Structure formats: structure tokens, C-alpha cells
Image (cartoon, rainbow, N blue to C red; front, side, top):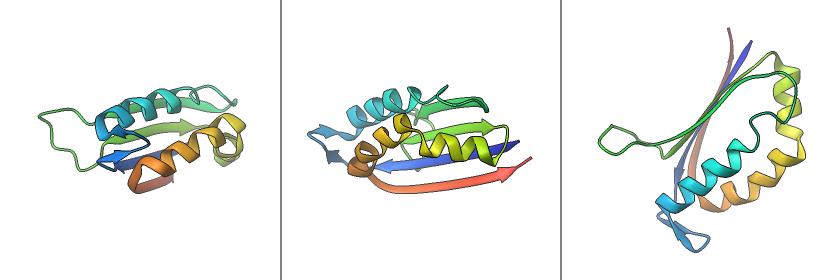
Length: 100
């Protein structure tokens, strides 16, 4: 199994909206990718919660059966369609993939 975790810090303003609105929109768009290819075991998108320590605004926690499934997800047109919006609203990104 391969775990894929990505965190994004968003710009204060981008694409005509503030950080909070863009985080909600980003979550909505990413959640459309939850079942686009076989091999996605778990797919969870969360937003930073008020009152809890968070240095990033949006996190994706996902699990794939193997690297081939992750590669298929990464290349899928639905995932590709999300990338321009994320690129426009993000200030920083951190990613880690690891096998368990």
C-alpha cells in the first residue's frame, strides 16, 4: 500500500476570492477525484480547523494499492483538471508518498 499526503498553504486572495472560499472550492474539486481510478483505497480532503494549530490550509490524505494506482490517479483527466485552480490559489505545497 502507498500513502500519498499533500498539504497546501493558500494565498490570502486569488482567483477573485479569499483564502477561506478558495479552500472550500479546492476541497470540492479534489473530492471529485475520490474514486476516479481503481486502486484508491482511501481519499480524504480536510480543511484547517479554527482553534487548532495548523500551518497549512488544505490537506489530502489518500491511500493507493500501489504506485501504478497512484500514477493512474495523477494522470487522470479529472485530476489534471483540478491542477490549474490549485496552482493559481496555492502559496506553498508539501507532499510525501510512502509505502506501508
